[in-house]
Image (cartoon, rainbow, N blue to C red; front, side, top):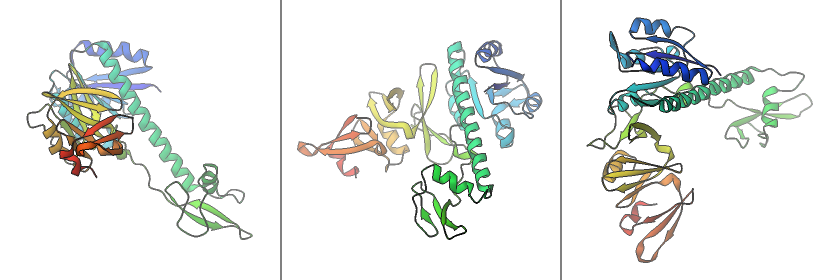
Amino acid sequence: MSLRVVVLGQVPPALPTQLSALLSALDGSLVGVATDSMAARAHLAAPVPDVAIVTAQFSDGPVHPFLRALPLAARPTAIIAVGMRDDEAVAAFELQATDFVLWPAPVERLEDALVRARQVVLQRALLRTADELQRLIGEATQVGGIDLAALFAHRSGHGGGHAGDGEGDGSGRGVRRVMQAGGTGTLVPTAAPRLRRGDLRAGGFTEDAVLDLSREDGGRSTAEGPPLRVLVREGRRTRFVPLAEVDWFEADGNYIRVHAAGEQYRTRGTISAIETALDPRQFVRIHRRVVVNMDRVREMTPLPGGDGLLLLGDGSTLRLSRTYRARVR
């Protein structure tokens, strides 16, 4: 798909030039550069660009409050924040930015951010398509005595229910039996929960808390609710690692190693800060140096002396200290 990109804010002069070269390789286009809020409103008019690359300031005011005040339909699907300081990353995350690029940055870093933004745009497009298909199926009428919704359920392998209202079809949805002429019955899916735009966290615009272990208080952003991602700084790069993907945290001197989806990230922080910030029912301390995501634990094996061995879903093993064994249920 063709990617339409807009630049909002006072950006370094080299950025639009780099963007033009990169977008031509990614089958995209730069629709404009707006250095003030009035120009930004003009560039965000329909059709709304897919991606906005933003800095902190317009010539006539801050950029982030301007974006938050826009109606959802007027906001680009993905946002890439560009900043000159590390501490701007948390503000970018609270804006639900797809990525944060610390400037100056090599062209490869900017390309990586654009590729990630493109993935978010594709995900949102797929969600809209699925929503539209669900609507069409719900509105479909019987054609030639065959219920299209029932046919769809049958062809998808979800027709395993029995007679009666509110039956299960093996997919987690309810089904009901519609009686046809001649007394035969057809299983038809009942209304299922529909995906909404806000359900797609990667590209949604709800303001979520972020866990920034590098702060002295081991803190979170000011957003309400439990943190959904952990901020990891790697040199001049800032990553937002979803907590749902974290396998375990491991203390390493004054640093924390974040083990997630087969990758390791190293950031400043303490195990105590992790314990304080995260849900103790999910992230459990099993050793003075380790906090594990219990959703990843598959088996526990007792060891002599009261210790234990935890086997994770990816095959990793972690030692469970007898001091913390009572916390693992």
